[in-house]
Length: 102
Image (cartoon, rainbow, N blue to C red; front, top):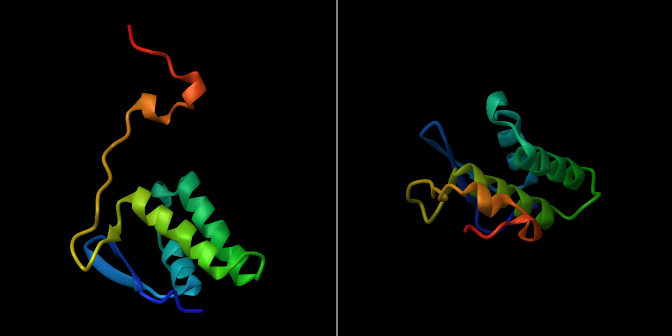
């Protein structure tokens, strides 16, 4: 199933178009081992589940898009990869666990 508009991701300066879940899964298989974390595993699991018809392909592509955003490799409008601002430690804490600075 095609996603409609292909997603563009950049890895090591090479821009690649992701048109479907199979493309996303192939890209994830080539992702550097030292950069594989929780978000990577979520994207890989979603792609695998979509290939096995356990979830919709559109949901898997949404998860992959989230992975690409977090990894800073999503190319917006054919331009350079968009980079997200680094989050502070406080922004990663659950709201109920945050302490107000004194």
